Image (spheres, rainbow, N blue to C red):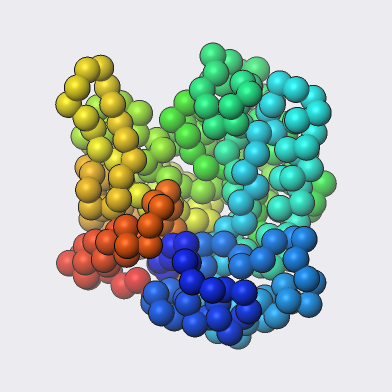
Length: 279
């Protein structure tokens, strides 16, 4: 596996970008250092730099709500997903990633209709529409699991893969987002073994963070830095180590570089204890 996290230094040129990656000990980038609106020549320079220096581009985010109840907002989100998937294909990223979306107005928030058969069918139609419009040949469209929308379980992701029926639809794994109860929290190693055991051939990238269960009523689950919560990182790393060697483990959702560094140190320490090689 490879490991990466957001960069906080100057990455405005390929040379500076490579320097920052080397400083952090990364052979993968969490995202491409330019967007589709950037200078085409500079984008090509970044692509060449990644290829020549064995840098894996982990993901291109397509963050939006393609299930938005307002038709205009939904159309904008769909266009964004298609554009980001096309860009991911152009730069050779492992995947373009989004969440499935919500039937409500908060793009990543819960809605009573989100876990219904009707919404499942809408997600299938939407994913097909995005993939068919782009027809990617080097990358994949993926959905990040969420606790209150599809795909929220191993079986839900398996159902989606079968229903979408597109070779360019693949899997993004974020175990923390799937922990939505005390049972899943305390037995999260089983959750991760089940997910990767069932879906390993389709997994393109993984997110890394941690989660902690509070001790006040009713149930409070909060994200935290790797090592500060209850995620079984030894189990997680053992399972990710079974995936293809270029699979990126991407740290996310911390605000300060020192917090990312602390999380990286923890993950690397657990990997060393488990005799797992991180490139």
